[in-house]
Image (cartoon, rainbow over all chains, first blue to last red):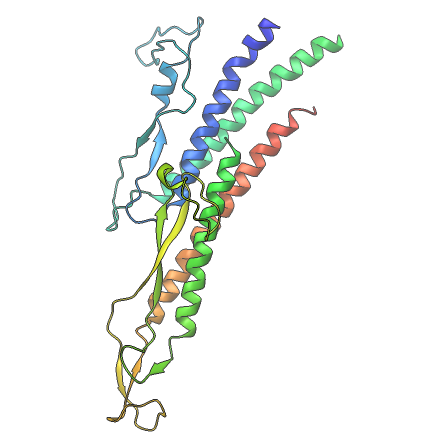
Length: 129
Length: 144
């Protein structure tokens, strides 16, 4: 059982994180007309730092460093730096939020595909085809 | 996790619909007149507010359930713009000098408000559709 857990763990955690990101973005879109609302997003670098894994080592300066430890239940939300603020203090820029939401949806589907592949691989091993 | 997206977008749909209702009411009353400036119709506009954690304990579900990160209508504020005075002595509502007071509704800005509300509504419908699609795909993993 242990290896199946290990096999799924990373993608399961990734899926949870993707879901949280989509939640944050949907909240931004919902509050696009709320005066004084500050748009927020999840910082991927911060989430990556908390991932504990033996197989990920930073060998390039562009790689994200991982520090280890359990990932938090709720990824820390950071305030977005807007290009243009509106008069009412709202920092939601709908075009950016829509683009981010589209990308987040793609990321979610990518993680789903990885998981699907793992599942079908194990299923095939069980069937002995 | 994902189910919260439906809640958040739902509160936004609710809020935008209220905004659209207010606009419709303003437009419907654009032509009404009154005898005194106090009685004259004033345009109403909803004031949006983000639902934050501290608001969740208060059981105020007049405008749908509270969902963290969503949006709700805080209050309806009246447009402070002055009402127009018009000389119309044959109007039965005219005061003793022959003046009636029209509403302060600006039709053009109401139309813009309506379009903005419709667009925001569409945005949130799209959010719900995407979340639904992703959830269905997650469920499909059971099959295959």
